[in-house]
Length: 164
Image: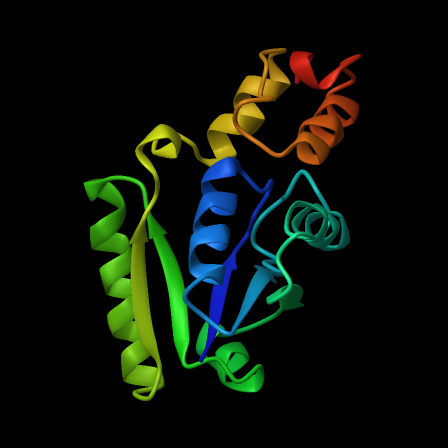
């Protein structure tokens, strides 16, 4: 069975990576898909985010990174996924995610959405929080993979990942 884990991943966090590693054990193939969203102004380009994902998941043989435009359900069908994976950090995520799941089901009834709870130790993480901490010089080394911490340090002109 194949699954799709879509998102912006700007940047990839340890919460994302936790879900990727756990779901890689459940599926034959997992595609981590970066949405090209013209309505957002990301810190990292799509190519940079794909490289961050590939580097952080290099130890997982059944995980690949891809980029897509448009509807998630269309890309899920294109890549042969039967499941869309979504992470939940807190109850506040559920209402939005449930609405998206119902919308996706109305568009592609054959696709299922699987919600996975983020590990407690990562439940406070979001890409927005990570960027805010990094922007103001705080350490994000416990929030993101090392390569991402290094990229954030470069982005915000910090000398080391511990400072970004």
